[in-house]
Length: 158
Image 1 (spheres, one colour):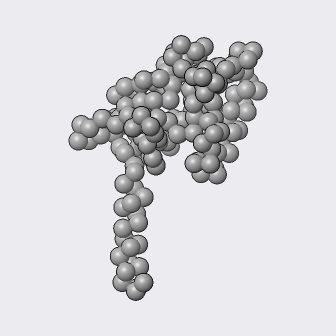
Image 2 (tube, rainbow, N blue to C red; image 1 turned 90 degrees about the horizontal axis):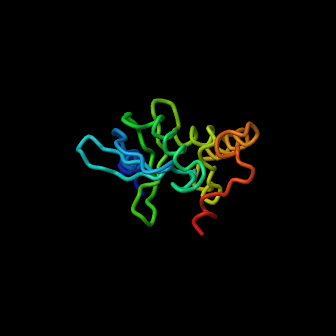
Image 3 (spheres, rainbow, N blue to C red; image 1 turned 90 degrees about the vertical axis):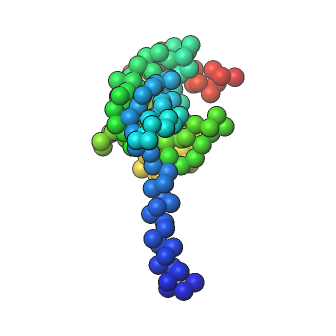
């Protein structure tokens, strides 16, 4: 590659990296790990929170998890750092309000599991933060960890 080609490519890289970010207001909470973001052009985006799995609606803590996520993000302006979509065409994102990672807050409150099956898709820092948050929530018996034997949603769905 020539220097000019490398320079031009370097100009495009930041655009590619930031193209996956969405900004807008959270207008709907489906459950403890799924929200709808309305962007500035009034387009809705279904977002599945990256790195976590929350109880299903009919599972113990399902409604509490949804309510907790709503208290964190509903009707708030956020940045969603997205990287891929799932089979339901939801974007998989880390949702940020100011400097707060909403996904991590769900784990810290004991309202979601750190979804270790997909931990390799997280940054090393996020992976460590989520693991520590889950460990502390278990230790303090917060939220779903107050149950004697909470069933992870990936097992509940089977």
